[in-house]
Length: 476
Image 1 (tube, rainbow, N blue to C red):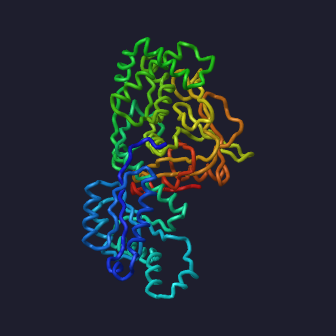
Image 2: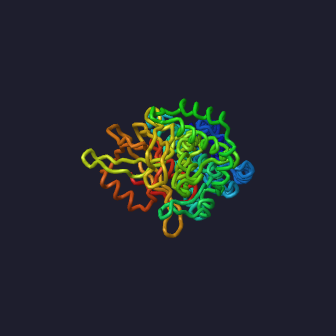
Image 3: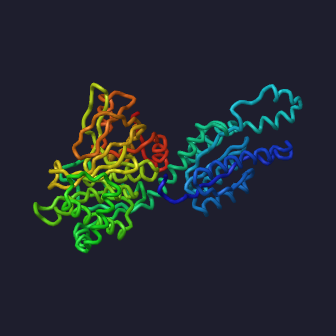
């Protein structure tokens, strides 16, 4: 289930007014196909601004002005028959939104025998025009190319499931783009010192995704934590026991410490209206801030499960990737390479820190760790495996020119032995070998983190990248 509000999308069909007096009934039949497209688009959960059949330059100007006034996220242009490009360009120029051209004919194959049996060439021409959507697709593309207008073309027929999957993906991508623009990403603490690959240009993130980045203070979290009552802690521990599989060796002191921090994190997120967060901190040994930061994992996992994905090690790029997956209803867990099984040709991904309940294979475990590897202190951690089945990996990559891009891959989360070390970790199988996958993914230049979500949706991510006007690379 998607986790963002309904967006507005635009729809207009094109035709040629010269045809209507020449071919009786043609316009009505084309309007019937327009109604089919409208119903399908509405079924994707969007609010459709329907501009009807545009068949003259005057109607084109009216339609473009309406679409701009309605502030649609994307415009779908349905070719019903041959139409002049002069009835298309004014709409798109005025709408000012990305355009997806639907080159969809009514049927996959014309009934040639029935068609030729009509006998009357006038009737036959009218039926042909009802099916000649492809005729002006090159004309539209040519004009858009010359006008430097970005466009996207979907070709098929009205009952073509593959074409409608493409169209649905465009709607989902437009929805995610709109929601990312409204997202407030919190940054708590600082980068893991020396982890150069995670350092990121926050200005570039706001420029590309359009979201606000809120820099948070650890002392604010401490103040909120100091105000947590014993009753708040008791209620939160009850929540822990309801949503986690709490290991028997989790002692009450650690549960209480994590619960107190979780309540404070909830209030921090609410105060700043955050939709995602990246964090890291250490503090001096025995310092109060160290006590806070070693007790955040349970609370950050709860936030992630409530559609506020949290990335550790202050990996802002990965917080963005996790949020995108969450908006698409795909989860989005924080991950990195763990190791490879070259005998069974599997790659292990996992991480300590927050995980996403929505994509867990079974219940998420809450377990004690005697040491956080590479980090200060000890405390509670999450142990889970990603749901077996299709998965997609996404990394938001920043190159040496400072530009952001997507790196994605599709694979399978597969059953098999995993390491019971108090971390999220899973086995993955890809269409290419484990060795080739690790080689090619690394050479693509991402940071060592990625987000993992359930299902195969790299196609939607590619469309989102096109809407954001950034590069996208799909490994497999």
